[in-house]
Image (cartoon, rainbow, N blue to C red; front, side):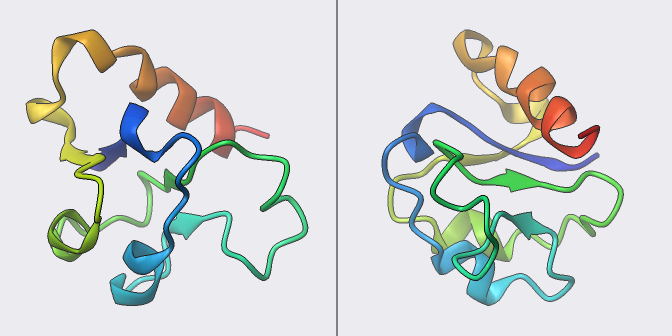
Length: 86
């Protein structure tokens, strides 16, 4: 089960989580051309190893294991899937 980045990331896009990810599964990074176009970051569910390092590093508490995602943010599961289907 992958982790999901939710509402608190919107407008923040702090990339501390990107730095600690051991498998480089959080995108877009500041080096990617679409960084400014996206309002938040996303975790690649196929590459995420569920280590949880990103959860503790996020300064706005925006990252959750999918099973712990607050119900009011359940639409972020689909948002995340859509980002990686592009």
